[in-house]
Length: 136
Image 1: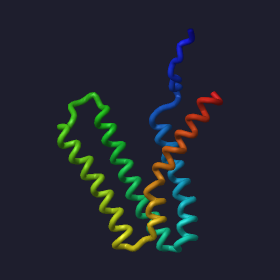
Image 2 (image 1 turned 45 degrees about the vertical axis):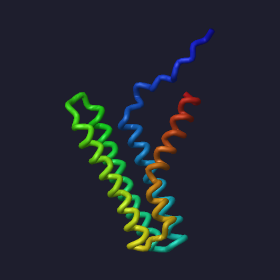
Image 3 (image 1 turned 120 degrees about the vertical axis):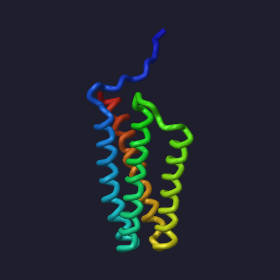
Image 4 (image 1 turned 90 degrees about the vertical axis):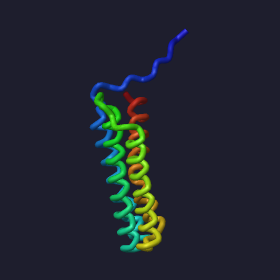
């Protein structure tokens, strides 16, 4: 009976390369979404997309920092403090979303597109990795 082993990650596939591809895909998504937001809602849509994209990228970098901190073989922060810092960052992200939509009155479509650029980058990396695993 054959034993099915999980695919091995190639040695040339480093975390920096993966994060670089996610960032590039997110940048391409921003450009594509900027065209759509500008056509649909004009400059307000473009500014809403840019603001929410900036907030999302900052949150992504914060999350990357948290993961790097947790994976380091050093003394970690207390679990309660780390949890509070992480929750505070998500609260700030939610407040930024509310301000962007309700106070600045940006179009919700452009704001949601801006908040999804990192997700598009991650999906792009998943598609690339899947394609790469089949083509070798």
